[in-house]
Structure formats: C-alpha cells, structure tokens
Image 1: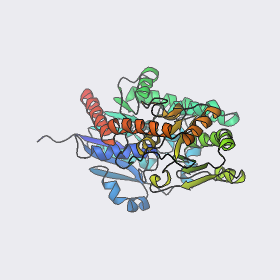
Image 2: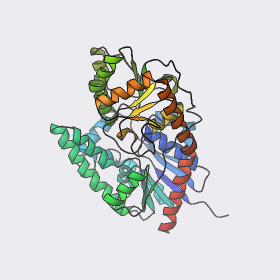
Image 3: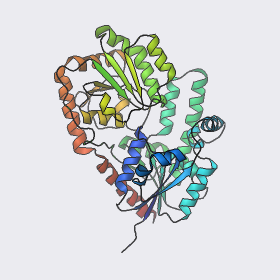
Image 4: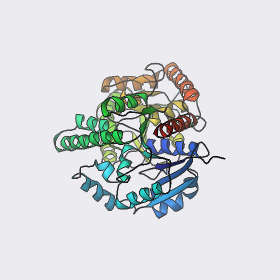
Length: 404
C-alpha cells in the first residue's frame, strides 16, 4: 500500500476558539482533510494554557500536531509589532516570525514533508531561507489591498504608516508568488488579482464554507422585533472602522425613524473607546464580547455588514444567511461571494441607503422572508465546509503533482 503524501500546514495563529473568520476557515478545512488524501501535520503556536484547555479539539485538527511554544499575549507581542514598523518585512509577518517559530517550522519541514501549506502569506516569514520542498500559501485575503484600503480613508501619520505597510506587503506578496508553487485563495476574484498583479503562475480558488446544520434555518417572523446585529472580531481594524462609520453616520438615521431599534455587537475584544462612546451618546447598543455561541444572540434580528475596508470573503455573511437572518451589506462586505443584491441580500454603500435598507428589513416581513429563503437555499446547496475542503485538497494534489 502506497503511503500517503505528507501535508505540513503552518498556521501563524492558535486556531481556538474559532472566533474569527480565518480561524473558522482554516480549522474546518483541516478537520475535513484529516483522513483524506494526505497525512496531515499541523504546526501552530500555543501557550501552555491554550494547549491544556483545547487539547481534545487540537488533536482533531490533524494526524499530528507540533506546537510552537509561545509566551502569553501581552507586552512581548506589542513590542515585536512595534519593532516591525522599522523592518523591511510587513509588521503582520514580522510579528509572528520569531526565532522559536522559524526553528519549529524548519524542524518540521526537515522531517520529510511532501507539501507545505503556509496559512496566510505572512506565515512565509517563518519559512527556512532555502526551501526546496513544494509549497503554497493559503491567502484568506489580498493583504496589500486591505492595507491600501485603510490608507485610502486615513489621514496624517496613520495614512503614511498604512501606505508604508501596504508597499512592504505588496513586495512581500510578489516575492511569495515568485517563490511558491501556487496560491489557494478564497474567491475567484482574489485568484485573478494574484495572477494579474503579482505574477502567480498557479492561483486556484475555493468556495467559502459554512456549517448549514449548525447554523440551522429559522424563517424570519412577521412580527420580528426592531433588532439589528453585527458579528465579528472587534480587535480587527476593518470591523472597528465599519462600526465607527455605522455609529456616526448610519445609526442616527435609523433612530430618526425607529428610535426603539436595538443593536447588538457580537465579537471578542470590543474597543473600550467604542463602548464608552456608545454610552456617552446613550445609544441602544449592546456589546457581548466573546460568546460561545452567536446563535443565542441573533434570533429574529436583521444582520448588517457595514464594512468599508477589508478583503477576502466574509464567513459572517454565509453564517447569517444560513440562519435565516436578512442581510444588508456594503458591496465590500460581500465581496467575492456569488450573491445578488435584491435576491440574497440588500446592498447599500452610503449612510442614507444603508439606513434605508436596514429600516426596510425591519418594516417589511415579505422582504425579510424572501431574502432569507433565497440566501439559505444558496448556502445550503453549494457552500458547506466539506465542499470547500474537498476542493482545497484537490488543489493541493494538483500543485504537488505539478511540482513533481
């Protein structure tokens, strides 16, 4: 019996709890890859506490797991990111590629991997200087595009910082495409960008996956309360920017028509300044922080994605659609997803139209119901984690065979 090829998956982050889109995507792909065409080995950082708390879940991710010891988050992480501002490597790549991480990846690779998958382009900074093993990177976003979008709406010193980091990242992504045997992206749009702008010879896309059984469908009620929700990690700058815009420009317009409307922000690490601002303005906002199950906080609500910057695809959109939550989003909030305005969600890109779309969802039961049913059918029939992982596996095999 022929031995399975070994796939070494290098993650720059600890994947539990699965409280962010990238963690959700990577962890579910790994779960589905286990037992398939490859023997899988996962390398990822973990503190002693994380390793103890999530031991069972960790073992379910791969046939073998190699943990990169790391100190608890805190001053070390902040200082490393700060020092990365002066480096030629992008901050997000420099911060993860310390001596311990590089040593762990080099040791794991030397044990005989057939293919290495670097999760996010940034994790290539953890690779050995000379890497003869076929490898690819899994691009959850076009990272330089996100940084450029931040720069476009920033001013003063922050604009200069964003522009510098965008330039560093664009050069980093270009070198990655030149050196790697391929790139796997989360949308056909991103794959085309890597081919056209970065010279990737092989750029292959997978669909965004969701668990339609876990996120079970509940039809919107005709007498749904005036409640709006947002889900997302609140330590991500794109989510912070989107909600600040929503607070400043969209929410007052909603309040003018429906002052009883409530808004719930579901996600870890909401900024203290944002919470205090909502309190000082006496807004009817609630911040949950991290929750074990977002389903407990979303029932009957309209779902908003007020993003102005970001990249890749938003898993939050498919989760909401699977649950039957009617969605209003900017075009960027559903970028890369095969969804249609007026059929699966309502699109709005300025404050007035966004507020009007949200108010429409609150006022029109038939609109809520129609959008929810159409969106659920789309997600359920085409976008499970199993489907996404199967295509990911096929792409990995194709890139490995081409390299051989």
